[in-house]
Image 1 (cartoon, rainbow, N blue to C red):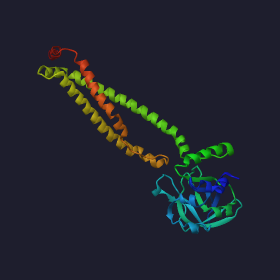
Image 2: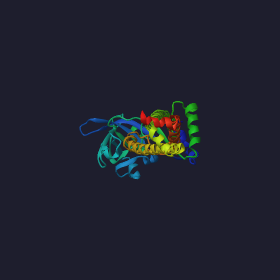
Image 3: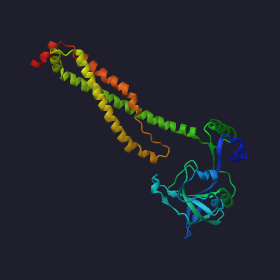
Image 4: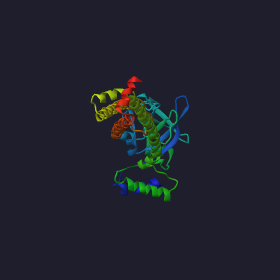
Length: 330
């Protein structure tokens, strides 16, 4: 008994955990055109649940009429990921002649054009990828009985860990030739990619942060040294050092606030114009804009902007007020 047959025969055991169980059958065949040439196409046999995952692009899908075996579903050419730019191979109402390995030919009317989710189709793309979908019974009748290419299970969130544990044990001990995929499997596969982005992004952020802090230190040091005479004169007329330190710290906080403001604006523009377009080109990416990192570093940035002017002032103002006032004669 095959893996899928075992699941189908024991479907009741999964009723409380698997909402849907579906087998998908596959064949690679040719579509005969009017000039006796052929187009290689991927032929799928799908039942109700698998059909429900398809996205109808043009035409109307009637499940009962489709089961008669007189109709076929055809994908559209996706060359840039933008649905509005899809190109139709055939339109609803047109007729397609499909042949099997024995040379038999059957004609089907196109009921609708579709987009097949990546999880449902063969896990590969080719240029000008042509895909046809037939009902399961018609597929077996025309192409012969065969084992399913893929079995889909739609599980509840609570039961997903138990079902995945069963799959892991079955594909390891009973049928090592079979493989399975799930959300957790994809998370593990993409974890290395996400970790790479985190590592590279974190490293670049750290380098830029250090450059920014060094530039800020240089700005404050230059400002304090160039204003030593001015600060000395203010101190001579009654302005205390504590007030001068406070004013310099406030100046540092203003620098930090302006940096955060312009940084948030610039990062938002870059995110929307450069990062967001990646989502349409990579189906496994989901775009989520957030300013949380800026909020996280805000306390640290404020502390740095206060401490640096304070430390620089203390080191630069070790001389007495008389020694600093003599700078005017230099």
